[in-house]
Image (cartoon, rainbow, N blue to C red):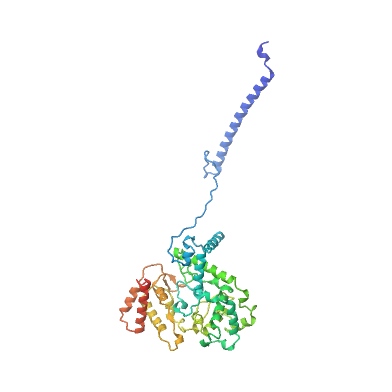
Amino acid sequence: MSQSVHVPRWSWVAGIGLGLAVVAVICVLLISHNRASLNSTVLETSEPSTTVSSSTPTIEPEVVVVDTPLQLPRLDFPQGSVEEACGFNELPTYSIAGSYDTIIQKNGDRAQALETDECRIALEAHMSATNPQLFLSSAPNFASLAELVVLDEPFTFERIFADPSGDLLRVQDALSRPECLLTGDETNWELKETCHADALLNYAFVNLFCFSEGIENRLPPVDRGKNYSNPYRKHPTPQEDRILWKQDLEDSWLVSKCAVLDPTLELTVGHYPELHTLVMSWHEKEITPFSKGVEALLVELAARLGDDAAGLSHTVFEPHHMGYHLRVAGYKFGRIDNFLGSRKWSRFTLKEEPNTDRFLEAFHFLARLDSPKSDPQNEFDLDWEFVVRHFCEPPYFVVQPFSSGPELVENGEHSSCKEIVHQIRQKGITYPPLLKMLDKFEQVALELEVYE
């Protein structure tokens, strides 16, 4: 028997195992190749618009997109102003109607601005000197009587928040005495001190701002659209955007002032039933959409009793079950009576583009206001800086026939105040009061550098 016949059994077994392993590897490779081909075919037939590359992964890494706030151009602000002290150039764009995250971000930016002592000091000084009437209802397309007249004792937030509790006591004292309860067309300016006319006005505005949601009805100085309540363009300019931030800080200041007041200062039926009933008895019995609330009635009583600021009120919000209405008529009992209802006042108050007819009418109106009065207590001074800026500085508005309100004049081309005044002088006017108005207007316009 040959040697080959006697090969050990384990050698045969090893050889067979090695052969089977090689066959298995070949099968796996063939199956993998077939599956890959099948998958490519399925993808190509089921999603013909999708291209799958065999050399790139089909799962892309997640990309996180972070929105970067738009940085507005830097503006020059006066040293010590709220804008400069609170770092307005570092604030992002203001968003009015954004997402919840945007609102949170805005609140955070506001809080960060208010963290510095410089910002808080500047904001306190600014708001303390601000007229609450103008804060509530000033609009860029209309003039307010409170802007036109200069008072010896300005009406300010510092005044109304100086002693709210004391003002309430003085109001209670005044309303307990029959001589102070003027109604109808009655006025008696001699009672100004003894009937606490100033406390009546202060207390009315504290209630308006802190307890009657007056701040929520504040007319914004910047808004979008073209009618009287939305006088600016669709997208605010950088200057307008900063004004929105300033208003936001102003509102925060006022909210913080109101937050520390005693809630029992609110004039309600629950707190002071007899006092509330007495005040509400002054207006007409019939309930109409224009019925007055307690705040408006107190303002008008203050005007009847000779408070100068109350005598200039005519655009103050008042609460009512049908909404808020601008229905305060304190001006009817103040120094400037029977003017606000006239056509001349309506024409004067709108910020129209400079034109000869309007200027002539305005100068006649101002000459009448500035004329000597038979009673010295009826005398008052006009704010000529306001008058000049009102007539010579844009933006300007126009009332179109059948329109819903004044519309912004987008075209920047218009006659200068210098050209208009020159045209008026060419008419050969000799009326001394009118010439006096022209001279004063021209002088102030030159000083303010808005004449040309």
